[in-house]
Amino acid sequence: QSTWGKPIHNRMALVAKPANELVPSASTTGAIIATARQRKSGLHAEVMLLAGHEGSVNSVRFSPNGQSLASAGHDLGIFLWEVYGEEPKNVAVMNGHKKDVLEISWNADGSKIASCSADKTMMFWDVPTASKIRKFTDHEKIINSCATVRSGPEMLCTGSDDRTAKVWDARTRSHALSMQHDYPVSAVCFSQQSDQVITGGLDNVIRVWDIRRNEAVLQLHGHFDTVTGVSLSPDGTHVLSNSKDLTLRMWDVRPFCPGERCVGMFVGHQHSLDRSLLRCAWSPDGNQVSAGSSDKFVYIWDTYTQQIKYKLPGHQGTVHECVFHPKEPIIASCASDKQIFLGEIQ
Image (cartoon, rainbow, N blue to C red; front, side, top):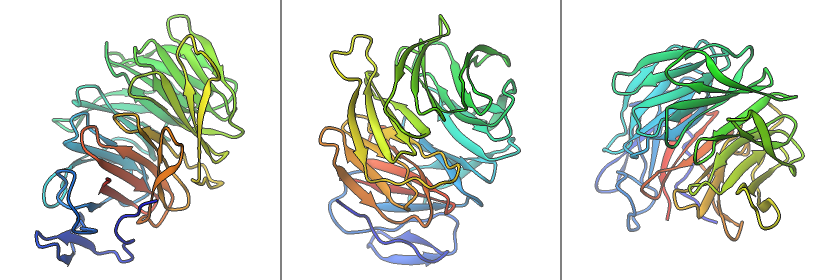
């Protein structure tokens, strides 16, 4: 197991200088260089701290080209950051939600962001102008999760406490399809071809829905507690699920699966008893997976050995999400401590 740097115990950011000196700074963004080993990415320092949120950060995502980062949480705004440079800059904040933003998702070309909130709405934002394009209001309760498609016509999906998952045409305000569940839906994502939606929720079951027939064509049983996050593999053949039963599971969702659907289980991370929705993610090559954890650590596993590869300290609160950069060995993590870390991994 590897670690990076040391936890930051004070409120001052640290700005890295070229000579690897650490210099305290009063700025709201900053960085620390953990070691002087050979670098593997274009990140200015091995570990960089992004501070500026005024509340818990619930979601963080890299843009498809890796140049930008978006984050959102309890302070209602969606923050846009530059990833590269001596000091990652907060270049814009998009405001409009009235309660916690629970998840964000970039569209395929990186020009737009979807966000969902405890205020029962989803919003679609134009990134270049940092302005709201559309507001979606058909859900009756908290929207826990939202996702965009990887290809094809611009569609969105959401999962809510109102026991439905909905599919939306991004060009209209009304939903195109509503998938009824018996319990609240806490996590959603699209399939590779965008013709299916994968959902997880309080009944512990992962469902694959055919959106043309509005029918659950596959049900995956194995978790013993609420599913808080789902993520599709880069090649579209497997789904990762994070659950409050303290397991991260990997499922084969190909139509004609040759054996057991659950083909991997990863353990070590923790869940608390609160409503925190801890997400999960794949590396771009599919060789590593990550999950949020309530014990303040960032966990990354090897997909094939299912062993913990990194257990990274630094956060001072529940880690809600850890995501991988699309092009370089960089991860971003966010937590209830109001902070975001960018870090280079080996």
